[in-house]
Length: 376
Image 1 (cartoon, rainbow, N blue to C red):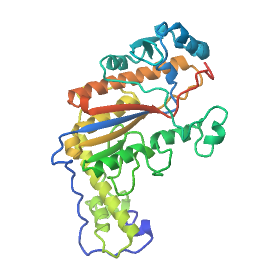
Image 2: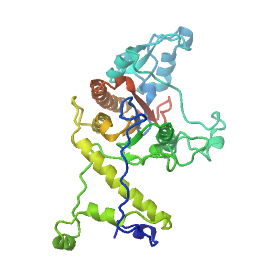
Image 3: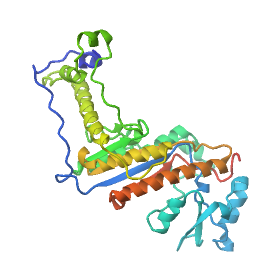
Image 4: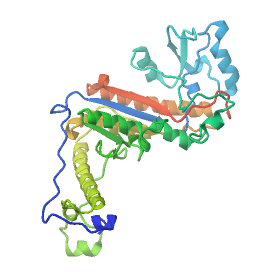
């Protein structure tokens, strides 16, 4: 009963007798078989990462008249990093006239990628609907956006729609809509639960897929109802669910038809993705951390791009634990080490698949921290 469209729409339906719903056709990409593949990985630091200690000024690298490290160390007080806590990143033609900046010592892979011109940092950016200063920001942004609210800023960082042009959608969903509208076959996947980031406009793209870092469990075709299983031991719930959601007549309930379409699509989607992931494996050992498992799953999905029929993919992954109000030095060192180890395995895996030049990984957080620490 729970699988029937009548139950969910509370309306009667008109079926086309014994006519099965057409199976969803497998996408093949923009021009036949999947070939020109590209992927984006959206990595979110949940909790507001203190990036002033991720990318600080480097001691002695700035001119005396604009000694950024001296200013940094004064205002950061007991959480300021020293040269021993950093790796040096050389820069040229920077507007500050500094010749280098620091990178937290735990981020060795990022240092290597930066030196090889395979990583860059975009700093001093944030979410403001209009220019404000410290005297008017509460009045100018308070109704639309609470700048110090984790939930508000997290949502806005994933929606990126400050002008409210497409309310209720996210940046990943809109990117997928644009790509699918241009003839590509773009999939969207979250390895971190349901996220507004993956929501696009209705009808423009396939539904986003949410899965765990361990993949998918096989659909159990047996009924969980004991008396039904007892009298029908060979009962296949997949067949029953599909049967009660057969094709409907043109004048049948729209809401019931929507339910039937979505539930049968979900079963087919689950079946094909489960089969693809069953044979997926990685050549590199990933850390057993949460982020390591999530990036391992992303790598497996990328490996099975042909089976999934995708020539474009956008993945959402996250790591929590950045809302630090104490033990900031130790906490950041631990978190950055976890991130670096997971990224190291992921980069090696993507390179082994020959997809390094076709993959972009971007890191976001809902906000950074104030320069003056609120704890130690």
